[in-house]
Structure formats: structure tokens, C-alpha cells
Length: 178
Image (tube, rainbow, N blue to C red; front, top):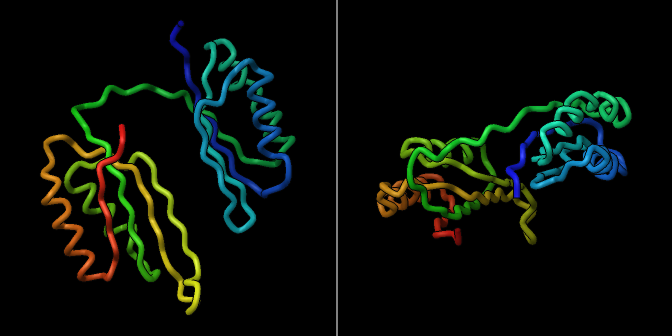
């Protein structure tokens, strides 16, 4: 099987029924495949990022023709050629979860600890919701992270334990299946 080329499409704009169908039809019509995607609606705005694979010629056509789907959907679309990067070292996959009463700075504090020890956030999803009985805003974070193999995981857990005590954030770090 020949190596595939990749393209990343991002789009954002007013949400409406049929956007996923229109974007996926556009990609399929150009003989390409959606390998990975993330999409969500925030306050009535649709946002998507899509990893497209296919023959280089077909990807060039997507890059040439995407303005048509942009006009049809009303989305602001951006296209970028994906470049595969070799990992600079050995990493171990971990899952990180955190939850607490919502307040500013939670993502900053957690990401600062991760960044300080060279941990890369591979994916992250956050949400805020009302607690069932009290209605208090609760913040929840789930992330998949790549921890350098040289990292002392117990020291990382100890740094998170400090944040848990200071900020009353429940943080859990567990090895993920690779």
C-alpha cells in the first residue's frame, strides 16, 4: 500500500443542519478520505478540524476548490498541508482527568505543569456543566498526553497533588493503552 499524503482542513462559522454532510461530500467527491476529525458547536458556532488523506493530486484539488464549499456553507475554511514529524524521543501515553468547581486558570495551571516537564497534550476536551443538586458550575477536563519516558511519573503526580490541595481540583493521571 502506497504512502498517503495528508491535508488538514479547519472550518468555523454559524451552525446549521447539514454542514458535516456537505464537508464530507466535498472531501469524498475529490477522492479523499477523512482519517480523523473533531467537531463541536459552541454558542451557535460550528467548529471542525479534519485530517484528510489521499493521493497528492486529489489533495491539491481540494486546496484549489475549497472556496466553493466555503461559499456554500458560510464557513471560514483554512487548509494546511500536514507534515509528519518524527518523535524526538520515547513517550508514554497517559490519560489525565481533572474536575472541580469552575474558576479561571484551571487549564493554565495544569498545562503549565505539563509543559514544564516536556509533556505534550495530544488531545484535550473540557466542559462546564451544572452540578445535579446545587447547580454549581463544575469544570471537567480529559486529556491524552505524551509523557517523555525519562520523566519521573511520581514527581509529576506530586506536582499535581500540590495543585489539588491549593486549588481543590481532583486530578487523576493513569497510564493509557497505546
